[in-house]
Length: 148
Picture 1 (cartoon, helix red, strand yellow):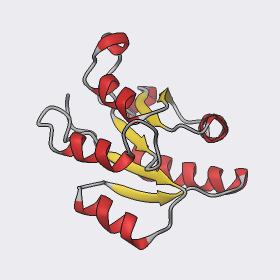
Picture 2: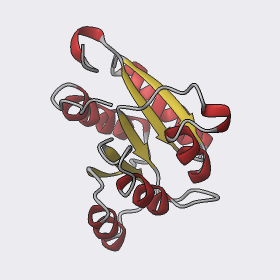
Picture 3: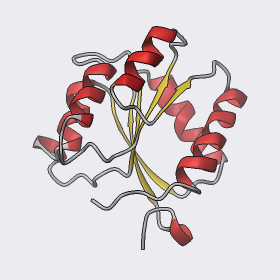
Picture 4: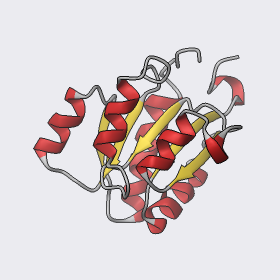
């Protein structure tokens, strides 16, 4: 069974360093009633270790999708995106940029590096719910994920 089918959970890796945004994202997914397993890392180095199942993440589930902030410590979101999309084992994982930046240059850079979508983080909870609803409506209910 593929992720998202008939209650089969989606494995989502959220790469976010702001604890408030992590909490908002978790709450928004819960309120939207999404069937998923949300895993969180708070910097770019940990994100790549998670994705490559290295160190403390050796037993981590391979994510079906990555929600990636751009402004991260230790390794930027742009660097993480570039590494993912240039790694033959990881490049098929959809990466959705979820960032506070609405700068056109950030959007262009990430799409040039093959981001699958670019979403600007809303500042309020209702806005977050709306974004999560859009993520759910398309990425979780409509999209078919590639096999591992």
